[in-house]
Image (cartoon, rainbow, N blue to C red; front, side, top):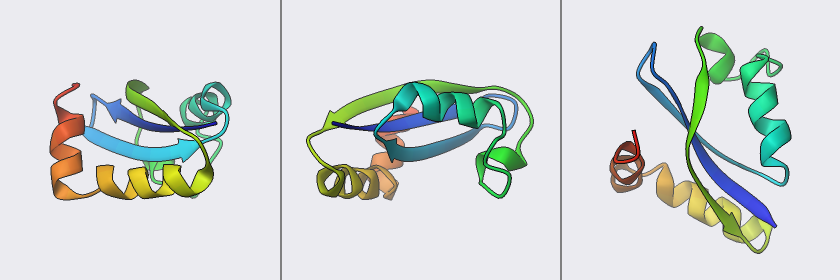
Length: 81
C-alpha cells in the first residue's frame, strides 16, 4: 500500500504533496530536514500532516498525486488547513 499525503507549513503558508510506502518514516524525514535538496528543507518551521489517503500500488499513487497537484487538487487540499 502507498500513501498519498499533503503536509502544511504554517510559518510559510506552504503545502507539499507526495506519496510514499512508509508515511511515518517520510514525515520524520520531512521534519528532520533529511532531504537536504528537497522543497520542504528550504523552509523553517514544522510540517504538519493535513491529508492522507491510501492507494493499492505506486502507479495509482502517482496518478492521484498528480491530481492533487493540479489547481483543483490544491484547492481541495487547502480545505483541510
